[in-house]
Length: 244
Length: 244
Image (tube, rainbow over all chains, first blue to last red; front, side):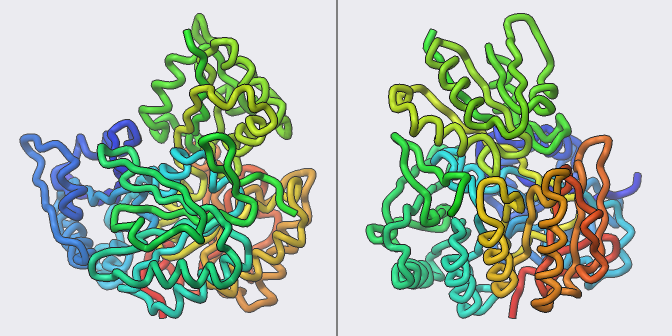
């Protein structure tokens, strides 16, 4: 049987947010690779080999997935959310660039509900107007690039979805990001802290940027900083479609 | 029975990209409202009333949906893609702001696979690094705001997902946007034209910005302009995770 490689998004956590396309890919897989907490979302069954791995091992995991597919496996690499948004798809194509012998393998990328869409839906419609998505991790880019992008995003009056705002190994960047946005006049913008949306640990909270503190976010939090027009209606937060 | 209002995303077109959560909402609905081509994706059945309406009637449709829910209906407003990204969710909250008597209605927003995620998955991983999403329609915002955001996005080296790049009533803006990005030095960036992804009319094409022409896009096209690092590997396009 010809091997295949599928890079699939499991959505933010709940099974009701997994697309039928992804469910079908998981059902016919021989091998599942991914960060251990995501692999653990796939139920074991006879004939399916689970290959959980550690965080920060994306490139090694991607190469291993290509190798297993080249050997004939029906291989699925799983990401939380969408595999193309700060997740495994780019890592697989990086690995593929280093291994031209595998470039003819049948590869598919299956989209998923990325964290910002799940968070936005729970809050209302804070991404209803132009927005950007920035990965706040400086593991793979200089912090100066992140700062520059945040400042330009504020100047453009984008709503800003912040992925990976804060972790044990990067405790300080998020506080600097908040301080910088305050300095450039976004203090009254609404900020949504959406943690583990659609899981049992879900928690969502909205404050102004002036009220926001770094401790409100951890590695399972997606942060959305509203633009100048973002506002509350009842218990909902939304960005009006119009802008002046 | 208490009325409810659900704002649901149908994904880009294919049934295999509709989440189980959305399918369940459609199955228990009494009324479906939306732009006619999206309502037509919901199969008719006894007890279900379909309310197709024209484009550009978002606010009237939203008010009607609230009214039907207030009268006890299990009302679902459908959008293509994700309802929170340049779609019906913001319109519903705008209508709600004008109608405080309905603010206690049970409302849910159900996320969907938005066009840029479907397009990115088909192309590879062009949204694997920081990016922004801009609605190129100037129906609800001045064109100058769009130009400003495009320039700042280019300066930030975001990949840029362009929604609603071009329509019969707005034939010229997209060409101006391409010209402007060329002027500021993005001519060698890769541009993905992704039309009607996951439908029978699917078509995807990638060229450099210098090679791109306005006619490559229509109202069913999602355009992704890559950042300075976006590149090809085999038949795939991706944004590397690293940036300098």
